[in-house]
Each structure stands twice: as C-alpha cells, then as structure tokens.
Length: 268
Image (cartoon, rainbow, N blue to C red; front, side):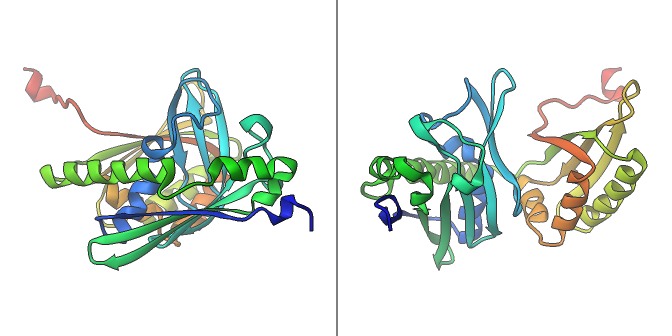
C-alpha cells in the first residue's frame, strides 16, 4: 500500500434545529449558499445545482455561461444520505474523470422531531494520487469546518424566513433541446406530466415548442411550493421518467417566484 492509499477520511459534523427531511432539502436545494466561495471552477459563479437523482450531476455555471461539473451523484437517499464524487485535481483545478475523484458522503441523522446531526465525510482521498496528502491536509481540521458552518447559517436563515412567512408558489422553467425524435420526446413528456399531476403540490405543466426551431422546447410548471416540487423529483418512481427524457434531450431547469401578475381585465 502506497502512502497515498493510507490517507484517512476527513469527517466533520454539525447539529441543526430542523427535522431530517428539512435538513436534507436545504443541503440539496441551496448548494450555492453553503458551498465555500473560494471553491470555484468558473468565473463569477451564478448558480450551483445538485441534480436530485443517482447519476445526476452537481455543477456550477459562471456569469459567461461556462458550466463545469464538480462531480456525479452516486447515492441519493432522502432524507438520510447523499454521496457525490469530488473532481478536484492538482492546483485545485477540475478533472473530468470520476475514476480519479474522491467522494463526499453526507449523512443526516434525526435526533428527534426537530433536530438533526449532519455528517460530511471526504472519503477515498487516495484516489487523487500524489496530491492526496495535500488535499487531506487542506481539509483536515476541527468540526464543523467552513462548509458545514456555512450550511448551519443557511439552515438558520431559511428556518427564520419560513416561520415568518407561508410557503410561496414556484414556477419551474425547463428548456429542452431535443436530440432524438420530437414525437417520442412529447410522448415521454406526457407520461412524465401524468406522474407529476398525481403528486401533492402540483398545479400545472405547459410544454411549449419554439416556432422557428422545432427541436427546442420550454416547459413551464407551477407548484404550490418548492418543497412539494423537490419531494416529487426525489420519488424513486420519477427516475425512469428522468432517464427517458435525458436520453432524448438536454435540459436546463431554473426555478422562479412570481413578482408581478397582470391579466387583461386588470389592465383596463
């Protein structure tokens, strides 16, 4: 066994005053808020997304549109566990091979109805090769560490906002560029919409096709609240729908809240 293979895991914990399902949701839905600002691969990061299923990506997008993945979702088990690959190479630059990436394991342990311990473990650091000891040294330190400390602050802020105001409706705008048959895509999307229509919090889906580019679509979906949407896409039954759509199209989902609504009668 080489010295690199002897590099131990780095495990840190924090306890937050929310139920495990809420702790999981905040971690999964708000990575841009808790991810360390210095850990960035793109110029002027504007978004950071964890796709909520095994095989999904977690990736960041820069102000100029540059998109780089930090890794892949290896395990997705709400509200107990998330495992991601961590594609960091020499000089903290991105690599594009999960075979050379270590793992980030995040476990959520309920301590009661409103309290959860969150453990974040960097495991398999030897997979980084010669730089593994340097990465371990940079990560090692007392709990909770920068990442979980930022996460704890996000949990506190979100919890305070939730107690002050009721959940607001959200709109998912998802652009699709179809690479396969448009007829097959529309049929699969219809089946996916039927699945969502049976989920709590679903209001409506409207799929639009661009007039001057028949392979370009936009789906506008309305939900009563963000938690209901996240719960729906976390269902194991959603994964076959997601895989079928990914096989035919490239998607770019974004979430919005309403700021102004005007109808014809209101404008008179």
